Image (cartoon, rainbow over the protein chains, first blue to last red):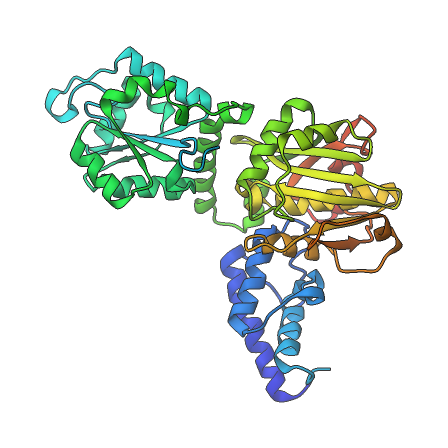
Length: 91
Length: 374
């Protein structure tokens, strides 16, 4: 995971999701901060987040991948996208 | 409901020579016939929303409606010099109503023809029919619920809330906190079932199985000791949201099975569904049972799957599932619940513990986490 090309694309993924989140929540989110800590995130927002990630990065999130832990922070979302994009490369 | 003639959910009035006698710009003085006034009041009491599409100066016409004492009955006045079809379309969009449920009344055949041409699904009525509207079947809902009677006020409060949300500068979550939201969860009584059935008919995106539970089926389950029917209502400082959610739970020794969970699209952006699932998770954890959720994918309910999976529900092998027999094509998602902290954006008042007959505020019962976050 420390490979330089992956690291730079992680930053790119986190930046794009971060911009989306800022527009939606009017709040800036650090990579490791739990978006769902307050227990108030609406399922509409969760759905929009899933659809945004899928549409922006050309991935499909279903079954067991469709879990809160994969969307909890910017970091966990970038890991998910990297894994889904890379097939077995990240394993 | 006959497919071809659904109940009208919103009637859009022309003003000159339709709602009132005379033409405002020419006659100056206009008045409303008592019989027409009665129709406006009657439709309002039945839960039929009423809007305005008129070619006039907005401020002048609205001031006149206020002086005549009827302005309060109308939502979304569209008083401008543009085509009426455009006003009608915008009103339908703002209300999120299908054009098939919109009606338009105007004295001028040319205006009706213009609306009919662009929006063929909208039903148009000549002004002479104004006095007869209350007698027409499409303006006569079979049942008038509590929520129907105050529907117009709920929409007016909703528009006001929306305006303030747009203006609000801080984080969305802080806006929610400023609303003083309260959620009430209660066991359904007989009279609430009609409101609940209306809700499951109106909400396809937030229905987890796409199955419609009829009035009579839900009613029969009220007295069934293996089932609980919960009704969720919400209010905030702008007023009541009415009944916004329903849950049908089947109780077995090892698990509570959510057979129906539907929430109104009006409260989705408040996180109502998330809060409801958290409360249920907490209640199940206290009761020492697992949670199982029926889910059947439809074209419109992916949001529901996200809601369940984000709440921790997953495909699983668990002995508690053995006692359940889901219908063909329905998946049972499973959760081993743990205690949950109450939300920070709303107060939740619910039976505590479930089935005890007593109610308590969730916030107070487990306030530790809420206070740490302030």
